[in-house]
Each structure stands twice: as C-alpha cells, then as structure tokens.
Image 1 (spheres, rainbow, N blue to C red):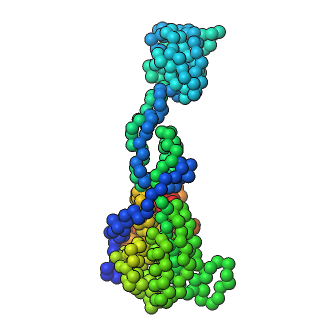
Image 2 (cartoon, rainbow, N blue to C red):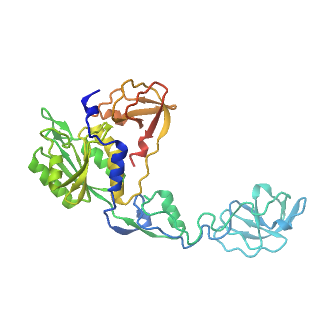
Image 3 (spheres, rainbow, N blue to C red):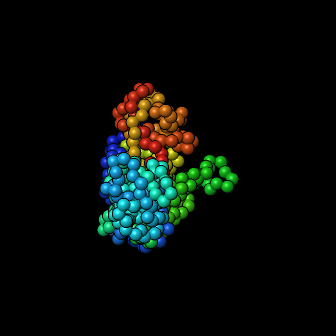
Amino acid sequence: MGCCDTQPGLIPFDEALQRLLKGSDTVVDTEVVALADAAGRVLAEMPKASVSVPPADNSSMDGYALHTSDLLSSETALVVSQRIPAGSAPKPLQSGTCARIFTGAEIPEGANAVVMQENVRLEEDKAVFGAAVRAGENIRRMGQDIQAGAEILTVGTRLQPADLGMLASVGLSEIKVFKRLKVAILSTGDELVEPGLPLESGQIYNSNRYILTGLLHALGMEVVDLGCVKDTRESTLEALKAAADSADAIISTGGVSVGEEDHVKGAVEELGSLDMWKIRIKPGKPVAYGKVIDTPFIGLPGNPTSTLITFCLLGRPCLMGLQGMNYEAPLQVPVKAGFERKRAIQRQEYLRVRLENGVVTPFSNQSSGVLTSASWANGLAVIPPETTIAKGDPVSFIPLSELLI
C-alpha cells in the first residue's frame, strides 16, 4: 500500500460529513421576495394554506354532470338544463336534468357524478346516458390536494418550480426566504494564471476558480471572488482576513497540505481554529474545516478533480446548512461493476465513471489532476475502504446530477 493510504489519523468520510453537518448552523438573515423571483431560494417560513385546493368540487373531464339517482337501469335521456364553463358559478342542478360541464368547472349543487362526453349521445336538447355511472365519478373533491389551514412545505426547502406553483395555488404572492449565502473563494499558488493570459514556464491556468464559481451559482449562492493568493504567509493571512470581512463562508483551494509552500493551514490556525484536517477519501485527502475569526472555512485540495469531488461530497452539504437549506444524502443506486479492483486501499474511493445499461465503466485515468475524467463521467462509483472489486460485483453509483445542483 502507498504511504498516503496508511497514514494514521485520517478521519473516515462518514464521520467527517457528520461533523460538518453538525457545525453548519444557518448564518444568514431572511428577506421577503416576490413568488415570481423565488425559484431556487431557500424557504425561511412554513406557510399555511388560506384556501383549499381545489376550493370546490370540480370536474376532471369535459362531460355532463348529473345525479346518479336520476338514471334508470337502462339508457336514460336527460334534458341539458345549463352550461357550466370553468370559472363560472353554477346554478343548482334541476332534478331530472343534467348540465353540460367542462374540465375545472365547479360541480353544481345536486350533482354527484360527471360522465365524460365520449360516453354520452346527444338527441336534440337531451343527453343519453348508460346505466353504469358511479357516484363521485370524474369529480375532483374540494381540498383533495391541499386543505385550508394545512402547513405546506418546510423551512429549509429549496424552492423548485412545482413548489412555486403550489404556493401560488393557495394565493401567496410573496414568501420569506433566507438571504443568499455569500461565499468567498480564493486560490493559492504562484503557478496559477487566469485564462486568456500567456503561460510562462511552470505556470498553469486556474481551473478551480471556475469550478467553484459554477458550483456556487448552481446552489443559488453569491460569490465573492478574491482571486489568486501568493504563496506567502503574509499574503495568505491578508486574504483570509479580507474573506472573513466580506463573506458568510470561505472556500480556498490548495495550501492545506504539508509542503513548505502550503500556508493556508497555519494561517487559519493563527486567525481562528482548524477543527478538522485530512479525510480518509480518494481523491481529496487534504480537506480542512474550521473558522477564520468567526467565519466558517473550508479548505479544499488544489488538484481540480479533488476540488470538484470534495466540494460536492463535503463542502456542498456544509454550505447548504449555512444557507439554511435542508440536506438530503445523494441518491445511491446499486449497479454492476464493469471493472475490477484487485488492490484494496484504506481510503473510501470515488471513481469517475459512466453508467450505461446498468454497468459502470471508469475513466481510464483516475488521477486527481485529470479533470477530463469528471467532465466525461455521469456519476461516481463508491468503493468502500478495504474493498476489492471483481467485474459484475455490485457497486454504489451516485449520479453527478445529485451533486451539482
């Protein structure tokens, strides 16, 4: 086994996640926004329905409303006594008659069923019905979706289009949400250059900045971009202080390992506290968590694939908690391994894979510096510690769609 797999003191992934979640209390205030602007925002109240949905019994079909007691054992012809389009107030149904009714229209008093128009024959001013009509047929009952006074949605819900529709259906035009979490991002490394500039010897383009910006925007959070930080203790301290002053949370990439040019860990400890460092996962062992002054801090590895995966698995749940958002563990589905892994390691590994026809195939190069693997993949295969894999063995698969929004 490689030395990086046998180091003592590495924190198991599940323990690290629980510690992050436990320490991620909401840090943002609330505001009221128009419902039309609330998509993707995080609900800060538990609204109650002031009306039932639907507000009255209504028809689920275009057809004819009647009372089943008016039907004979054979065919029955009933006079059509009124026409009820959706949005109009019906009159009470005259005994021994039926009403022409349209989808969504309110059921008239005295009717207890709707017969769809395809099952009705018209003869002059009458509609002819068969005998097989049940009470309640094709009627949507008042409140079958939402009862007046019911609590709808919970605090911490990230509002999706269906949620907005449900809130609108009970008459709400605005809603209380948590303010957007401000997240400061900074990259460390003298070798980093912004895209568009020429590369000198020993330099690379800063991809992590754009990975994090995209991930944070997908979560509906506000980015405070502090750019690249020089590999000096003084520059690192200055950048972290600026981040703590301007944001609700801080994410850095690089500088949390043990090299002579890795200054972030020491700077965080000097300015606040480092509560967790080094996780038993691959890729991404050097993940740090703590506080800079009083601002939550997450330190991610510098390799781009490690940055992406550790953010999705550990940084994202932490930030969701700080935003007031409910966290649900990502969906994991059992699939078949289209590969073998003969060598067991002590870290929990997340392979970049593609799922096709129930079988996952890993990208050929799983190096943490190969970002192509993550762009190519549609999910992660989870390999628990001390586990070998043979082709056809069941493995857990996490779709990337579970981690990127």
